[in-house]
Image 1 (tube, rainbow, N blue to C red):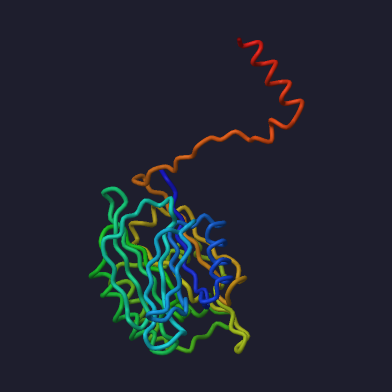
Image 2 (tube, one colour; image 1 turned 45 degrees about the horizontal axis):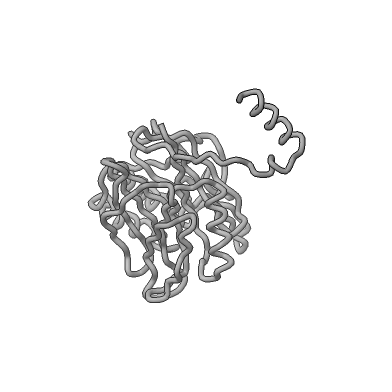
Amino acid sequence: MADIRICTFNVKGMNVPAKRSQICMTLKKQKVNFALLQETHFRSGNVPTMSKLTFNQWFHAPSCSGSSRGVSIAIHKNTPMVVSSTLLDDDGRYLFIKGSIGTHVITLGSIYAPNIGQADWLCRILPVFLDFAEGTIILGGDANVALDPLIDSSKGTSSLSYGALRRIRSGLASVGLVDAWRTLNPSVKDFTFYSGAHRSYQRLDYLFVPPNLLSACRGSSIGSMLLSDHAPVFLDLQFSFLPKPQYTWRLDETILFQQDSVSDIRKCLSEYF
């Protein structure tokens, strides 16, 4: 069995090289295999060259109408996924990729919902994702709505009507997706976004999976709001089809500069021969 970690993160801009470096370092430190990113602020025709040291596969859906959107998906170099097809939004609101690890098919989606008309947008996009998806399905992103205001908002209220919230929940149910973090943390009250204007916290960022994938989930957690006013959300999965990472042993050369260690090595070698 091998572990895989997925992260969804509204980064609030990756146009500055220093910010890109910080985000990549954070994802590397958190041992993320797949990063679903929102609000990259990349515009069509102006996507920077991304570092290939840690995450060697990058897919982008930049915005053609403004710099306040853009979504991306990054894959760690040690994750042997071969991407076969992509589906993206010209407005930088969604990006879906499909590929395989060995013979197992995986579909990933990164979405960034608008801050008005969320119910209409999500109910329109979810069937598009389902039609594209195959195999293991994971959809993450910023839905711009607290699905259950009583526990997903510090004030217990929502700007959406209960009818609109019911439509979103029904839309998720109709495509067979559940909120992984809430399912694994049913009684926990935690948030992913802080609004300075409203002085309130909300949980707006989600990782949605089919119910049959929950048995492979080892846990889900919410990170810190350090690089953005959103916190990353992590989901840890355990799959039998993933190959275990291979590591090459290497001698710690500092041992050869320690006199006691050198003496012990010489003694052992002398006894052996």
